Image: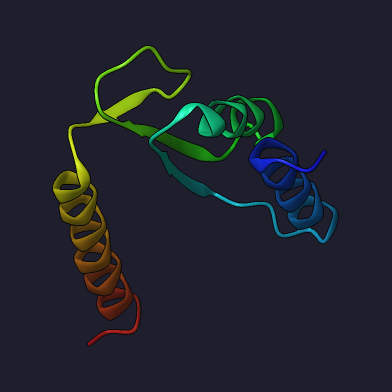
Length: 94
């Protein structure tokens, strides 16, 4: 009875209840079991959150974005890490 969609909704609810709603949500999945998670995130996320729901491989999906394969997933994560590191350095004047 506990799936990815339920867990995603619970995490988002807990964060919001604690006064720490997310401002960025990245959700990546590659099969049918991830569809509930995509739907749950789009329904449960605070309106201020930037949501990037990505499915891997071209297929009908509730995800907004498509990544072709795991190599694209890795490139996306590496790009986010670089951008995050640059933002942190700017924030701390380094």
